[in-house]
Image 1 (cartoon, rainbow, N blue to C red):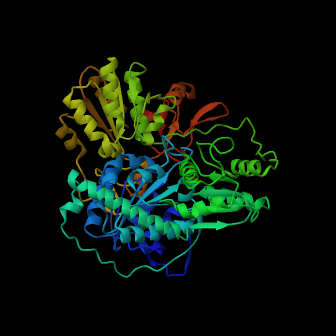
Image 2: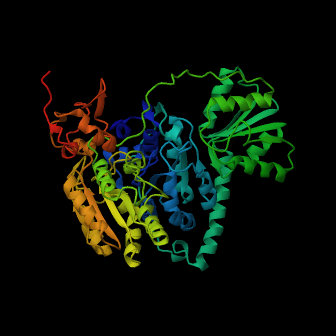
Image 3: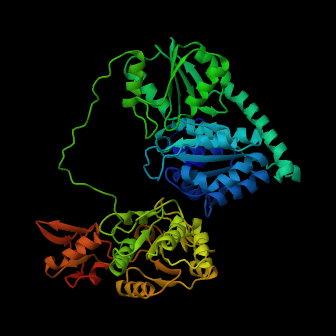
Length: 613
């Protein structure tokens, strides 16, 4: 989806991803300032804003990390502009410090925080439920369940934030971010005037004396937001009977599907919550009073369940509340299977055996793998050649995390984004063992710099390998502060990575990881040294290089000697272009990227040319 997000007329129907619908919704809400740190499943939102940013009515940036993204937007909303900040759920951990205070300080221009949660850990290291952050920080929270709601709630969240002058959370999950559906466009505002900033330190500077009344103001804002939740069109009730279901987020869809497929629609009461915080207590209490049993259907933590249990106790409502446990787990994604089991259990119906897809047991496995020509593979191969199993490998968040797989086995532990240097330094100090820490260029800018400074300050014995592939590859090739080229051309203000490392107190060594001999020589020299050391392994991601027109045209490699002599290279390099045909080692010309790294490892492999077809 391209310019249609900016140009579609009101009433026009678009087929959008949930993430694309969020873009359209915030545009309809008058957004004028967008910041982010890309992270799946939120990445399509900032990527769309980036692609449309030339001549668009808003400012956009890929910030250095989530904390900076929220702080930059925080300043912009204080200057009176409507703002959107996007990140994945673990990114909110990074942004939590300013988030907690921003709710006190207020957001006069309006500010929506998109928190894209990831039940099931499709692309994340945990399943945390960021509805808890909404409660912790005092942020009104919307949870869409369709592409249309993604658009409408994004618009209304920004409108509400601007009206109440408080940050609002738009909490999505992977299935909602990536759902595709019809979306009816609304009006785009012609112009949005910034609210003028009036100096008022008592309101905007949270010293202890002013923070206390700020908190009191926030509590008042939440009460106003609660009144709006009571009347919100996103909180709806249907059906009849004394069995009820309260649901939110994508679980609303699963429940609706089950009721429709099993002919139960209308025979039970359903309360769907789209504006889930502050809790519309009166509406929920009225619903509870009509039921003898209520099932709470929500993914991950029992957030609504606990609050509704407390509400029933406080209001003296006698109702059985069923939630987590049994058919509705506290982990992973829900589906119609476990929701159906819960529905049938409470209705006393027998659950039929689940339909299963018969999958042959002899299908080949396809584990995640680094791409053909990926410079990270070459770096791992060289590091393993020099250090083998003697070193302990501290890894980080990025494509290169796949180095934990055989044959490299180059990830012994990982904590969070930017942790490889700090955690590796601590492990080295505590164990006395050699430690190699891997970190990408984008991740280093995000949160690795402080770890390196600490390593220098305390002389930690650690080798840091910065895998600089000139982009933020894992989340879709977004630019980072060090890139020299983007889809729009040259970056006029790249940050000099090596100068930054020098400023931290270390003279780095830079190599092209696809030059095997030079990389091994640099690693061997580092192996004989102590203290903090940095190797910059710089070579562009081949996919990104093709996207920006910088890919080198090289022929694929070919096996021209005895294929049997290449088996060690096959087993230790594991390039996806390698293949066995009729039991003989060969190289797939269509998959080979032409990096020529394997040519340096075996005399039986040479550069070649594709045969004429």
